[in-house]
Length: 320
Image 1 (cartoon, helix red, strand yellow):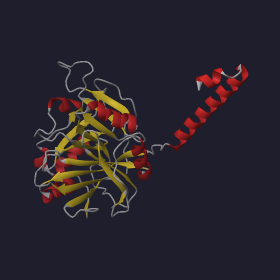
Image 2 (cartoon, helix red, strand yellow; image 1 turned 90 degrees about the vertical axis):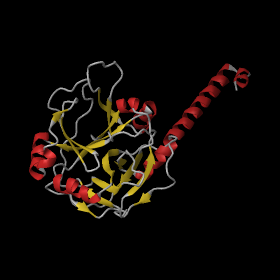
Image 3 (cartoon, one colour; image 1 turned 180 degrees about the vertical axis):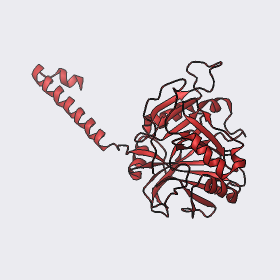
Image 4 (tube, helix red, strand yellow; image 1 turned 180 degrees about the horizontal axis):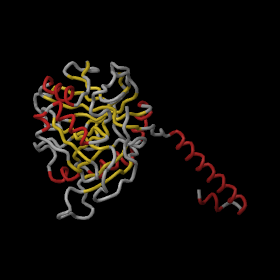
């Protein structure tokens, strides 16, 4: 190409170069237009939790927390608990091998599940061959993230009505240990477009700069977030048997008021726990279901200045 341009007169070479540049710009523009665009990811849709005794969980999730139980969407060995207008928890029978990870799936709501699948595939992410339709009419596909956790993307569907007696009607975050930190950050931040929300460490004693224990990242188009527990990932070898640190957090206006309801509905359970202040400045009340999955009730808004870092995005608001 350079040799061809040398053999041209100055004027012809200039015209040729301009045409070439315009052609490249046009080709790049067409390529950008044809590349799939990520649709909105608006929040947490549901979670799947594993328990050995589904009857025992009905008291915890139904009677104490107040989420109404209903027929599951698909599997027979499960109970569906409606949290809010669209959010729910599906409690399934734990498999015989009794895995330590009891939060088995996190589902995120998107406005266009087919477009999101195409977007991920175009960005080199392994996705299933097609989108499935569930019994309630929702469209979804599930996959694994870089740490091997099952995540699902879902759109639409019909759901039972939530209960006015529920302590919370909005799950605001879910937490997972992280081993492959760089790969996880790339997937959630760079590919999916999640936004940093807060980061911090467990204690100030012995803290090393740049070594956070927690990193919270919000969905791109909402205020729900995923909490990456980095210290557990550093200190616990992948696959080792341990307690289940994975959890999910229903949001409340007041942790103290939530605790008062638990005291009324199950005094024995309430005697084992107490409200506490989180490192992020929000009140917390940690309850545990019959198989020790942590349900971390959390204030929507912080009541004091957080440690470690400021919030870089707006906190969730109460929802119906």
